[in-house]
Structure formats: C-alpha cells, structure tokens
Length: 113
Length: 113
Image (tube, rainbow over all chains, first blue to last red; front, top):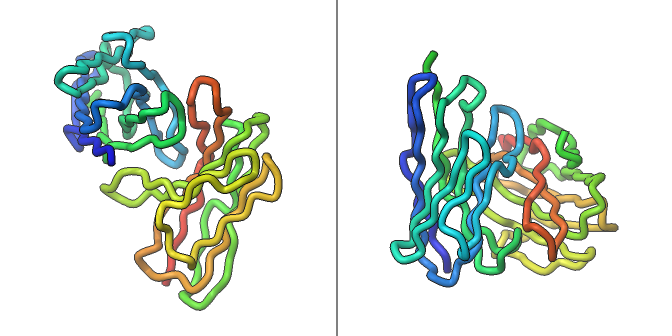
C-alpha cells in the first residue's frame, strides 16, 4: 500500500519568515495530494490540495509543489503569522478523492514572535 | 464550525465499560468516516460508510463496532477496550464524486483506564 513520509516533525520559524514542509510518497499511481491544518483542540481542515496534472498551486500565502518523478510534494507558507501555528498533515490517494487517503505523521509548526 | 459535530468531546472509561461516540453532519454529504489519531502516528482510517453502507473496515478489532443509521449520523460503539485504545477519535464526512475534501469534527478524546 501507499506510504507517506513527512518531514520535519517540528519546525520553528520567526514570524514573517517562510516555512517549508516536505512529503514523499511511494505509490506512483497516487494522483491527489491534500494538505490539512489542525489547530489545538480542533479537527484537521483542508487548506490546499493539488492533483497530479499540475506542478504548483498557490492560494495567497500558501503554495504546494509536486514533483511526480521524484514522488515528493511540499507545502510553502510565506510571511508566516502567529495564526499559522498548528500541526500540518500531508496525504496522498489514488482515487482523486477523500477515499483511500494515506496521511503523513504531521509537522508541528511553531511561529516565534 | 465545520458542520460535523461529535459528542462527547471527552470520555473516560474502564476496560469493562460499554460506551458510544456519536457524530452528526449537517452538510448533506453521502460518505462518513471514523479516524483514530494517536500521538506521533499518522491518522488511521478505521471505517468508511458510503450511502449508509460500510465500504471499508481497516482490520479494526471487533471491540469497535460502527453504526450508520442514516446519511447524517454515525456511531462508534465501544466495549472491553484496552488502554492502548486511548486516542482522539475523529469523524469526517465528504461528498463523493466531488472535490474529495474531508470535513472533520473536533474529535472525541477517549481515555481507557
């Protein structure tokens, strides 16, 4: 089955700096790659996703890049703010949807004031 | 407010107790999920219901018993649990054949003594 590795497990950055979280996947048939953000005491919430027919997608301060050849994808957050502090999960699936998602272990992002 | 409500938010039970977790979604979705979230581990998919039929059961021990009486409600019945079952149990819903986004509830924090 699919295996998703996520790094780093903890990332601390100064407010205003950029943060990058990386994930690799094992199944070359995977074609859908969402990122979820989980704030303390809440459930995960989708913040951005990318499908295998594109290499990059942006939404304001967040962006995701996908390298199908190397089987890795990354989340980029620019101009970090205190409200970006949370745990971020990457995931991958073959069906293009919510079913069959395999999640990474998560990255705890800490924004230092 | 994600449109997915879970009760109770916290539950402490002994190994011989029987309890149930409840999930209700107000989004008109046709699929519902139970996930287990343990510290430093990826989100683990337990059960999937699509159109009120169970379509996935990921080798979950029989001490966990799901029930989906209609497309808006999902239960997880618990009996003779073990301390290692202590975790955050997350319910999610999605509208299949659409974007693939999972909408999570805030979770039920279970402690087994």
